[in-house]
Length: 204
Image (cartoon, rainbow, N blue to C red):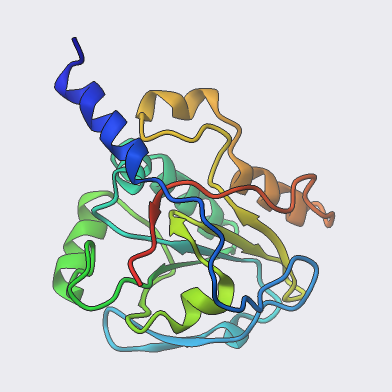
């Protein structure tokens, strides 16, 4: 008989969506990352071009997605954010959920959620009409992208190698984003430039 926790993991797995988006994607590995402009929780506008010369991580987020909960409740993503931003990496959270969709938190609620989990992104950006998500082909939460200081997209895909909502799998998984950031810091291309993302579907 499955425990309530096991049933949660099974249900979370059933929420995972791996379909390729039907819209045109302009973000391609080895090419310049498409520029965009979005507002943060305080109404301040952030443009990707403003971070020229810096390594940038884009993370698609839905605070209520079980896969996101896995990586934040365990401290996995907050720890990686803290380490990366301390090294000068720009880390942008992007929520492309449509108004009223799961995880479409109002700014005060999103701010509280970030503080509760000790998150350390550079900014939390709202993409309510899904323009930027579609531009990058974001499929799941989380869906991760790494852009090198030359502005080139060098990684897109999953946060790590074990596709589950179980926090106990984190320690056993290879963290693809950490590996990609280490390669960028060394001035090389990541060994893996693309993997299949896993998580809940982005709520366009």
